[in-house]
Length: 216
Image 1 (cartoon, one colour):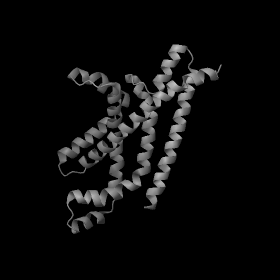
Image 2 (cartoon, one colour):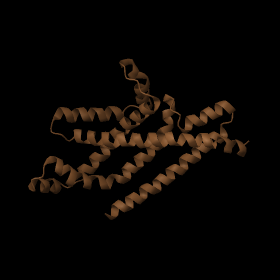
Image 3 (tube, one colour):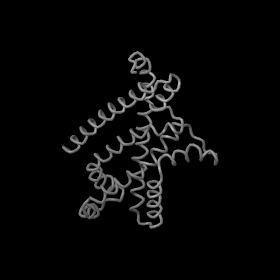
Image 4 (cartoon, one colour):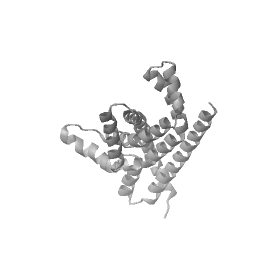
């Protein structure tokens, strides 16, 4: 039976884990944004070996489960002297995993730029760095903002997988409460409601950004 008194009692514990969940999502997404852009650049360089290496990295990461990558970072790297805490390992795992997907998003945005834009930058004698920063990226990123926002939401909803490497986010906090009290219904229901509220609020914020960017 549902107990409201128990629900109010455990709410602060569940809410406290929200901070870890949100921080892991933001930090992981920041790594994914930068890593994805670097991989997208790597696939467009003239050096074939670097382009091939970037393509292999993307395919390898996309072809292996996030959980395996997290286990490798958290449990495997200490064997070669690299030990990371649960939060750092979780953020790094999320960032690396989603950088492969975001690199494809960047690539689609860059490929959509008309050839005339490249030729115009060349005709104006822009350097390669100026061409990318002033001409290509501003036009390539704006249309892909909705897709980037969707990946942010997907990453947020995948944070419970970080409990597998002992990071105490909302799901693991609920499991610990259930193990201690033998009451799981209230804890897992609260986690579900909080994910729903935060995901919906984030989707509204992303929608507003889409509208704002669309008007620029």
